[in-house]
Every structure is written in C-alpha cells, then in structure tokens.
Image 1 (tube, helix red, strand yellow):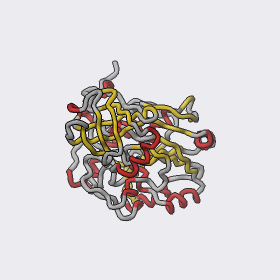
Image 2 (cartoon, rainbow, N blue to C red; image 1 turned 135 degrees about the vertical axis):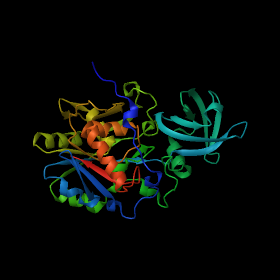
Image 3 (cartoon, helix red, strand yellow; image 1 turned 120 degrees about the vertical axis):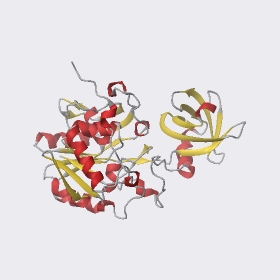
Image 4 (cartoon, helix red, strand yellow; image 1 turned 180 degrees about the vertical axis):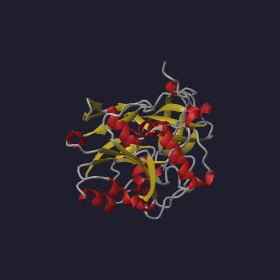
Amino acid sequence: MKRLVKIEEFNYYLPEELIAQDPLEKRDSSRLLVLQDNQYEHHQFGNLVDFLREGDCLVLNNTRVIPARLFGEKVGTRANVEVLLLREERIGVWEALVQPGKRLKEGHLVSLANGELLGKIIEVGESGLRLIEFEEGEALLDIIKQHGEMPLPPYIRNRPDDPERYQTVYSKEEGSVAAPTAGLHFTPELLQNIRGRGIEVVEITLHVGLGTFLPVKVEDVEDHKMHAEYYSVSKEAAERINNCKANGGRVIAVGTTVCRTLESTSEKNRVISGSGWTDLFIKPGYEFKVVDGLVTNFHLPKSTLLLLVSALAGKDLIFRAYEEAVRERYRFFSFGDAMLII
C-alpha cells in the first residue's frame, strides 16, 4: 500500500533573519551548496562552471516579470483596492488576485492606474481570484508597465532600488508575476565562461504564476492542486536538449520552473517542442525523464518547490543540507543563496 505523504514532513526551522531582504551587490557572489554523491560541499556561485562538463546542457527560463501589482479604487464607493494580475485569459481579460476580495463581486467596477484602467469583474473564484475584463484591451500591457509595481514576494520587506535586480540578465519574454529566482545569480560574464567550456546554454519560457504564492494547505500532498502556468519550448531548444541527452551529456535545469517545463514536455525521455499550460506537481516518488541536475534557491517550508527538490535529491539529503545551510547562515529564498543538485 502506498504511503501517504504528509506536508508536515516537509517543515523545517528557519530563523527569520536568514530570509534575504536585499540582493547582493554582485549577482554571482552568492554562496552555492553543492549536493552530489549523497554529500554536500560549500562553494561560491561563480564556481558553478567547475561542476559542469563539456557536452552538458544548461537550460534557462527567459521569462520576464511584469509590474503586475496595480492600485486603485472600487467605482461607486471609492474604497481602496489592490489587484495582482496573474495571467491573460484572452485579450483584455485577466485572472487576478484582488484585495479586499469579499467586497469585489461579479459586476463590480474597479478604477486602477490613476484612472487609466477601468475593469469589470466578470467571474468570482476562490481565495480572492477574479476574472477582470478591461476596456483598454491590447493597450493594457503598456499601461501596466507605466503604472504597475513589481510584485515582490510577501517575505521581502525591502524594495530594491533597481527593479532589474528582480529580473534575470537574460529575461526577454514578458508574462511572469514572480522571477525565476535561481537565475538571478547569473551574470553575462559567467554565462560566457560556461559557453566557453563547451557547455550548451539553451532558453525556454515558463511564465511564473499563482502557484508561487499558494502554500500547500492540505494535510496529504496528493490532495494539493497546482495552478496551471504557460510554457513555450522552441523546436531549436528541444533539438539541442535532446542532442545533449543522446550524446551522453547532462541536462541541468536552472530553477524549478525549467525543471517542471522539461518534465511536462517529455515523451520517451525526449523534450517535445510546443507551447501550452502545465500543472505538473513533482513530489517524492516522481521519476525524472529529462532533468539530470538542478540549480535552485532555498525554498519555503511546506512548499511544492521543497517537495520537488526532495524528489530529485532525496528528502534525507535535502533536509541535511538545509540544516547545514541554517547552521552556516546561508541566505534564504528569492534574494538568497543557491544550491546545485547533480
């Protein structure tokens, strides 16, 4: 009989002062905890290249965070409202998280971005989710860029002076509400060094959505439902990844978003090009088909991301490594240090 996996098994103690509030001055000066051969070692992120081999393939997520947090008022009452746009369902219609959710019902109007956006709530979902239709349609993204605020995670109290520090240096495709934070450690120079060692660097896209903000609230992890996120893998990217596998190289995913995308598009241990939506939930017991290694940050207790890394490296090793990271005062979460699992 299959053992039920309880989310409480994926809890750990983290002193609040270890939650990184600001990015380091140099992106690649963060620490790197390397997990291999059932052991861990302490390194600097700039030394990542020393653990990659010629013929390996490093896969990046080139999504770009949009300033999707908007402020305004409810039309008629002038009550303050906050809207976090999550994804565009169709032109001019967005899924969003709204506050205060109880006061914003179907048919209500909201005025946002200093009155430049007028939205109508056309559907009410759970946990503050709404579908909002905007009059501005195709011009909406330009208005968001002008008036929106970068939606930082709630555990980050300090807003960086330079918003680009919450973007990867290779971000291109706009559409995320959170950064693929494992990629924040890379610099153009480090990527050039990696390519110079004969290591393929490939880009795919997954727009980070609501799943980043949703904790696991159920006792049995099998009952947790992932929120779907949009991905795109080009024909060229799939071919380069598959050639790496065929030639005996390792596919190293930069971030859990890349990991989920590659595993979602796999068929007979090959990546299939295309685009779509994935709600793949990777947890202990999952058999990886494409990904051989992972660059990742340290994740929140009882999160789906902690379950994913435990599936790849083994729960015991992950928790020993996390305990070591706490002892050694590593910096945790989005602006924190990194881990390499190979």
